Length: 250
Length: 247
Image (cartoon, rainbow over all chains, first blue to last red; front, side, top):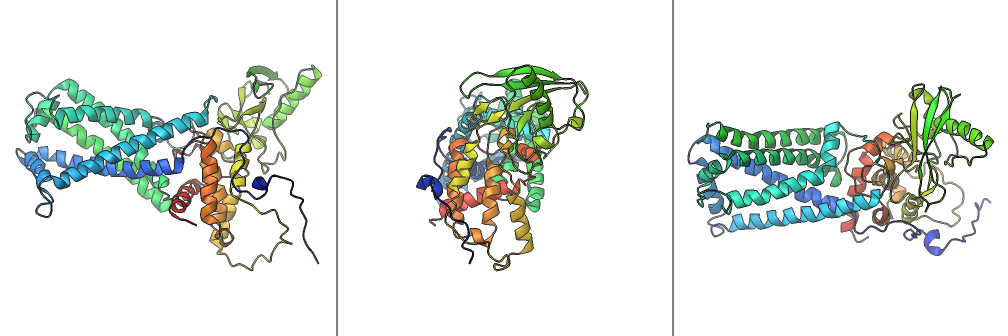
């Protein structure tokens, strides 16, 4: 009868039975990049949906006087009478802020991990993907910081009004035009929108993989989303300062 | 062919290294990069110079031993081809080729172009294995498996563990390697009992040494086994699912 080969196990039990690898050398990085990336994908996807909703709201400036202000007022009213006024808005703001900070925290962990994992090696040649995809992926930390810094100014400018001349609470259309009529602000705004566009090119592509969705059909879907969504966000948001500086909207 | 080689020389893991330039005047287009190194090493030995250390075994693209950065590209200019199958016909006469060890914090240089890839072995060990006699191979058709599943598991099992995916990755991530190893078992009925624990354990071992995936596909271009990027998303799914599960 064939009893098969017999092995003499001399390795430590941990190795012989594979109960997690025994580390001899190595880097011992903290955390789990798959979880960090999933957090970035969920929060980033949510933030991207907000960006689109924000754009849809802002484009009402092209509908004529009063539409944007009425929409702003609706944002405070929505949820009534089930919820008191502004409660839904504040709930949304809290979730949005939480998503924003979770996104940044996970990003910091990923950037630190990648820096430690690459160490002081010589940089490999750039391969894989299209040049735009590679550029967008490589510049994620930079475009993210640009967008975050711009967001602080954006809130000071159009939410709290401290960076906006003659800011009037609730006068959304007036405040927006007063802000972007200053050309340095329009330039900074446009650069931030471009940075956001590149950030979305990579984000909208990779979030599917980070959450475990794959296959040819998913690739077709995400190719469209990662191209169309950034294009719409960039063109839509750039249309506003262009229209204001050209005097089409006043 | 006249080929100029800039080769990374380093005597011990702790010593400083640097590129040294050599020329091989009698190279031929059908020589592989490893044969070029053999040719050069024969010369170096004749001149009583320590030959260049590089790893190699089967030289037919199936063992996963060889692998260097060729002008910064893991394995070399031909896509999905191990270093031993990279031939000088990819280069012009008079070319300068820079050979460096595959790089990552988890790949310490042992000597010259040789690196220590035990970090990959630790991931495999974390996946678990049996060390008891299990008799001869069971009858192949005793567990029915759909052909597509068997084919896909076989595609994943094609990974030869050369580690070029990590060296090509801008983040030194091992996701293609880990994805192939996790998927080849997760797809098959035999892999189900320990599916969740294995995904968790292997991902945890990989997390100790390697970077995060940016989904750019540098690994896919370098992989001599042609592993699909699908295994990366599949790995993410396995690990995320396993993180919720208690099993």
